[in-house]
Length: 170
Image (cartoon, rainbow, N blue to C red; front, side, top):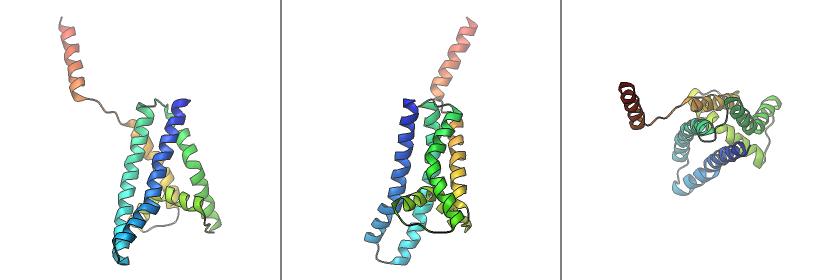
């Protein structure tokens, strides 16, 4: 249970840092560095695309460390990630149904959380409806991809194969 909680805190921390940097640090830095608004909007679009790519990679890494570092089984890992995504998924789902915009820190944070993947999708395909649901589903897919990755040291693998062949010959 301790490994699952540690993994949950690490995942929450990494994603929260990404959201805070994307929503507050980057816009503030762009506002301070560049006086022209058109240039800022173009740079921010490029930065959003970059954040989307980094988020995809981060979900893959979270899947990998969940399996290989914390040794969490597949269904347990998906359940933990469902717990992690459920408040934001519910917020997005209810916002889509009610078509009413809410303002507040949690609403902005939830939009930013799902927007890590949803905003690059909106920019690439110019489609807005249900991109947040797409982002939640995509995060589960990339988490599963990360669980399938096996990293092996080639030198150690070749050394073991050489030892096995020697043992077989003797």
